[in-house]
Length: 65
Image 1 (cartoon, rainbow, N blue to C red):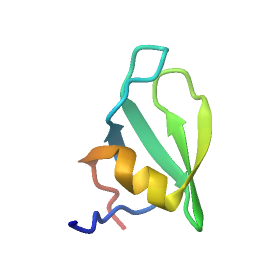
Image 2: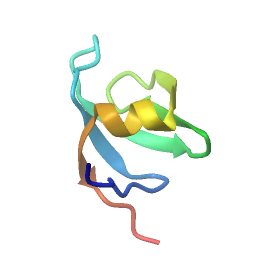
Image 3: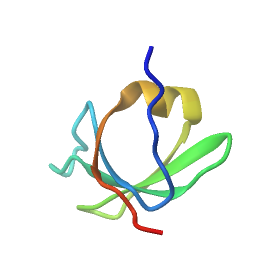
Image 4: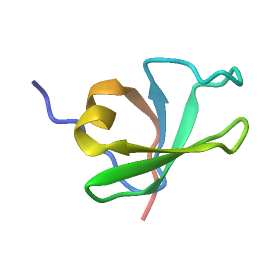
């Protein structure tokens, strides 16, 4: 399985859409768990890193350091 590269403040697309209707999420915390924030309604979710890597579809916007 290919290793997905993602960093803090990247905007990603998940496989499932959020109930508010948008599918854009911003990574706001990284560690053993990853916290992502919905770009539409600002709801945040804490997901284990393995589960996040499995459910992430693609990176929409890479954060410039």
